[in-house]
Length: 443
Ligand code: CTP
Image (cartoon, rainbow, N blue to C red; front, side, top):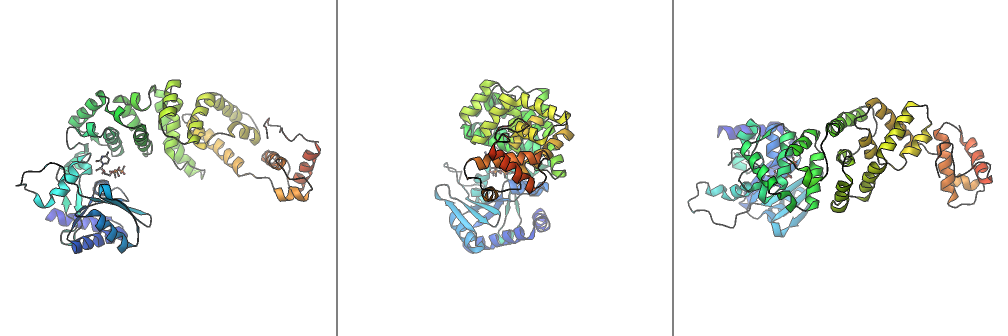
C-alpha cells in the first residue's frame, strides 16, 4: 500500500495537469460503469523512467468499446472503433488515447487462480513483448495510482533489462527482435541473456522472413527514428539481421562513421537555424542504402513499400552519389556561383544531400546547406503578370524566362526589377539565349 501511495504521488507530481485530470476522469467514468481501467505499456515504462511519453494506452476490464465511446463523448474527442479487436482510438486535441478490452486467452485457467480479480488484465499483459512494457497503473478512484506489476517489470527497469515474458515471444512476433534492440539501445539497457538466446534462436530459424516487407520496413523505420540509431544498427549487425532487412549490406567502419555523423550534423543545422529534415530516418535510410550492392538495392526497390520520391533518391545516390559529392567538393573549394550549385543539386532531395555529406566536413556541409537554402528562397523580382505587361505573349516560355531571371539573380547579376525587365526583353528578342545560363544549366 505504501508503494501504491508513492505511485499515486508520483503521478501527481510528474504528470502534466491535463493528463492527471484526464486520468482522474477516466477512473471516475470507469467507476460509474463498474469497470476496471488501467494505463499500461510504454506510458508506464516511461513514467517510471522519468521520460516523456504522450501515447496513452488504456486497458479496460469490461466492454472497452463502450467505455471508449463514453470517454470520447465526455472529452468531446473523436472516436474510431475496431469492433473485431475490441479496441478504439480517441483523439482529443493532439492527444491520442488507445483503449483496449483486456483480452482473455482461449484456454481456461484453473479455477482457483490467486489473482482472480485482475486476471483479465494479467492475461492481457502476459501477451505483450517485454516485462518493462507489461506494467499497469490502476486509474479507478479508490485505488488510483496502484502499480500493477505481475512480471517483475519494475525490477527489470531498475536492472536495465529487456526480458521477454515467454519463450516463444520472438517466434510468435519476430518484430519483437527489433523492438528489443530498439529499447535496449534507447534506454541503454541490455537484452537479458536468456532473452538474447531466444532472439538468436528465432534469428537462426529465419523467423524475420515470416514478416511482411511492410512490417519489416516499419520496424526498421522505427529504429532509424530513434535519437541516435547508430548503436542499434551495430547491434543488428552483430545479430546478423541485415541479411533479412537489407541483404547485401556490409557493415563497414565507414558506414559506422557516416551513421554516427548524422546526429551532430542535424544538431548543427538546427543550431545554425538551417532547415532540418522532418523525418531524420530518411537520412539514415539513405546512408545505409547508399552502401547496398545493386542486388540489395533491387531488393529494397522490389519489396519495400516506399514513396516514389524516396526510391528516386536511392537510385540517385547509387548512380550519381560519388560524382555529385566530387562536384560539391569542387564547388566548396572554388569560388563558384550559386547557379552552379543549383545545377548540381537541382533534383536532389535534402535528405539525400545530407546522407551524401555525412562523414565529410561539418562546416562545409553547413555552408552548402545555407547556400542551398538561399537558392530555394531566391525568386526573380518579376512575376508572370509583369512579363505580360511587357507585351510578352504568355506560354511555356514564361517558366523558362522566370527561371533564367532567378539564376541570374542568384549569381548577383540583374540588381533590380528594371534590369530584370530589360533582360527579359533581350531574352525574348533572342539577344540572350533562353535555354542556357553561364552555369551551364538547362531551363
Ligand atoms: N507490443 C507488443 N508486441 C509488439 C508491439 C507492441 O507486445 N510487437 C505491446 C507492448 O506492450 C507495448 C504496447 O504494445 O508497450 C504498445 O506498443 P507501441 O506503442 O508500439 O510501443 P511503446 O512501448 O509505446 O513504445 P514507443 O515508446 O516506441 O512508442
